[in-house]
Amino acid sequence: MGITLRGGSVFDPDIGSQVRTDLRLADGLISSPEEHEPNDEVIDVTGLLVTPGLVDLHTHVFDGQDLGLSPDLVAAPSGTTTLIDAGSAGGHLFGAFRFAAVDRSAARIRAFVNIASIGTTSIRLGGELRTSAYIDDGVAVECIERNRDIAIGVKVRASGDVGGENSLEALRRARRAADRVQLPLMVHLGPAPAAIDDIADTLRAGDILTHAFTGWEDNRIVLGGRLRPSVREARQRGVLLDIGHGMSGFSSAVARALIDQGEFPDTISSDLHTYSRSLVVDLPTVLSKLMGLGMSLDEVLMRATLAPARTAAMADGIGTVRPGAPADVAVFRRVHGPVTFTDGFGGTSRGSERLEVVLTIIGGRIAFDARADMIKETR
Ligand SMILES: [Zn+2]
Image (cartoon, rainbow, N blue to C red; front, side, top):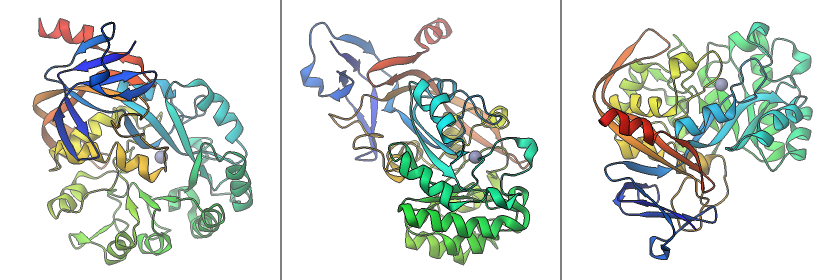
């Protein structure tokens, strides 16, 4: 027996737009609507938006750790079915991360391994790179080799507030680790050092700059209102710009300047963690915010489904609605009306629409269901 989502507007990342069609799920996979069987559960999603389950490229879901949120709290209620943890765990705590998050969550979880063996242990630590003994590419490489099934790259928070003068050395060692395991390097952008030009010059095709639209004075990707030459060159090489909203990872002023010039981010992620949650809210809110700043619905959905799935080298079909792909699906209501968004730099922006999650299905099972609330509201 399967589930047929009937009458929705289905966003198909393979064509980059929406199609009015039924979507059938059976045996944990997306199947063809023609295979509909009489005893299928039929869910009427007329007037609703159906998308592949969202893929969030930057989260912190090391449950039980200071920054870590419960993955099941972050994923299904946000229409998100795949979470990428952005370096909460370093090599010396990765086993605990696997036990606390990956093994226990309904959502699919992958992770970047922090170049610091202790990971982002505590916000009180003031940065995992302060003590140079923790910056260890050997530990990161060994960890990735042992966890190839879920470890998808190396993360370094190469900024002054995390590593002080150690930041450049950490960046160099993270580069070395990523090269040794042949996986992407994700670098976060914060206050210098490292300077944005040093970071941009370090990154290669497939690497990721996260918090790319941040608003740190003197260390942002915008220079004189335009994309910095070093970042422009990096993009031409195939370096990817990720949002990673978080507490201080997103400035609406920077975003507005870039989006107005057609410089869109490659992926849109939340950087949800214990301390950013009240500002970020969830990934659909970040998508709505970027729509308010000038991107279309299809453009933001692409960057939270297939684009991050490709960046994280997810198995075939994740982030799509192809027949045979895992049945990870989200259903949203498009709520029209004026909405005001805030960023972490005191800036605000406006929008005219927000996305509200109605249903989340992970591997063919309903993991979140707000249909009852919706019926009550419309009465
Ligand atoms: Zn983060």
